[in-house]
Image 1: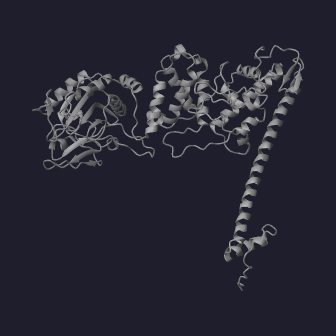
Image 2 (image 1 turned 120 degrees about the vertical axis):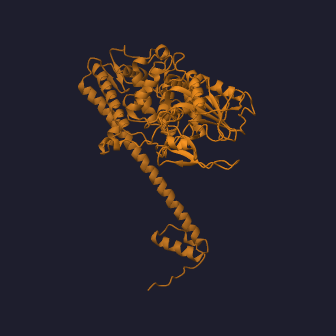
Length: 582
């Protein structure tokens, strides 16, 4: 039973070291030996693996692909290519120099067939991920100016295209060496007599010189420009731009907000393309942001938000999940939804999402902080001081920015007239920047366009404490305070009754705001209805004056249902009596 459940295996010739160099035999290619000067017609066989005995038989030409791991890489140069030594005697040295950062410094050269094309084998000792080796090879060669094109220059394993439909993508296959027309080459690119034993000896000698390990590949992956085949040029450029900004890490103070934004964009949009697996959301996205940030250079020296890095990552994750960005490969971008209170969503019976549950928890924390400040009699009246007081409760600046209708004197339940007149003034560019929690940060959208290094300011000039001769906080005023600008409060007389009074006022203002929104919506519907009605009246009026009996009859029929609307004096023809259907 155990042996029957095992994967089918061909009979292996364990004494043949040459055949053991190419262990992956599934989905192999084969072709009949062609006529002289004619290219082989390759076919793929996926019903069974290629066996050692078939290769030894030699009745056909054979080629193999790469599995999940490999111990060699191959560079293919056609005879007509500009990169062939007959066209450029120094081109192979340039190729080796480009691959040297990867640890590949030596190669094994042979002809691919009678055509005279070259196969340069780069073997190494430890098995590596074929996918990573393919990406690194392509990156290093393209950065050196080589163009990877069929008929010119190809690498094996090749970077496989990313597919969005879940289909399986195979690595390209290459012809096995030492078949008809394939010979080892000397340093002068001249063929020499060779057999499988000679090939294995040279392979093992070269293998000892190529020092390649996983850490080297990962390091080059970070430094090299990643080119993802199968995606648009804009997406490929976007990935490169993000990598350029992220991989250098921190080089000074004040870079945390920018770097976290870049990390969040790359993790949310392209993580499943770059690293495989499912697109990141929720806690998985937060964990990835934190892990990448901590692994970057300069994090320990220059990042001054290490104590709250998880909280900042959570804010960024929420920000991008509520933005217009979406996972690469999604069929359609996610729709732009109007912001809504998660509590209202729960009230109508819909299951709240992860983002909505997090938002509801944040709103609860803000309410509790407001209640505690009221109970202590220390709720500042002015927006700046109130904002700073709420920060001390562990609430981030981004959370206060999004839920300012719970605490800001000018936003309690109402949006400002400026927001109503300019609904697009808070649109953010690439990427959406949540506000920083530092004292000097600007924390909301202003009339001036914000640059990508600073967040918008929540504290508008109206109602804010902008006087230069006074401190930004008014907590020192111990005798009398103004909460929301309406109620004078003594610090010794604040109790539960007053807290309920203020919370009731907040709730009343929110209900008034919702009523105003509903009234505005009804007004818009009425205006649309009147416009449509006027359009129909104008159309019927044109029918009356058209002189067409059919159109006039239709207008007369409509006028009978809607008397007194049309100007019947424009009628140019007498009413045509329609025949009785009876």
